Length: 284
Image 1 (cartoon, rainbow, N blue to C red):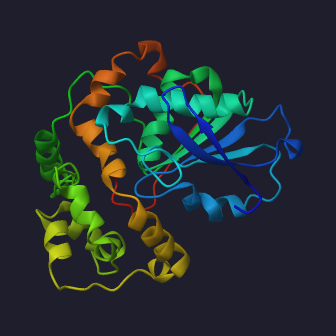
Image 2: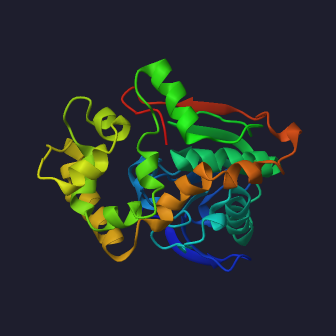
């Protein structure tokens, strides 16, 4: 992303956002900007190889570090992560750059934020691209983690969100902070069905991080540019912010927040593309 300029903006919620943007002088102002939103546990840099493949695009590119990550503020209050607040933050970034329209592209939790940005500010969006996470309109039912895991276990044979119990536990983020190397292995182990074992197995993550078992890594996870960036970021930051995204959902902060979305905005009325890699685990 060497061609992008690093900038910061302070939002009305007194939060500092870091973002990266391509030169306006090279863009066609009639074209919507490409607005890339990363997921867990990444930062703007996760899009670098995608952006580097975009050879002289006719539109601007803008890529923020999301709330709780890297160069952006990391509030400890879970309520600060509600979608409406984050959407206004993103809107203020676009307003600071006088960007009128975007194609919003989100991965993982970034896909959830991208779709809520559309739901709340459809006038700003010309298209929606979701990676991994499918479109989920606001629900009339509160989220119940136990029920969700029971349903997915019956349907798929294993509970998709078993690991959420760990991520949303009071000391979960501290355990990760104290075991970064082993958490990197949890995320990127190369053994068959490793993701299923770690993410769907009861207490699997905590057991692995407190034990002596070692797992070979996937080839990309051995590359210093990815591993070193992860270690550098989280050695000085904490996983408290990133895990607050899970807590905001599991505690129904997001469900309550979604009530304010007009029903006419629940349907996506712009071009929409959903991409899922066949090896993705299929959940946040």
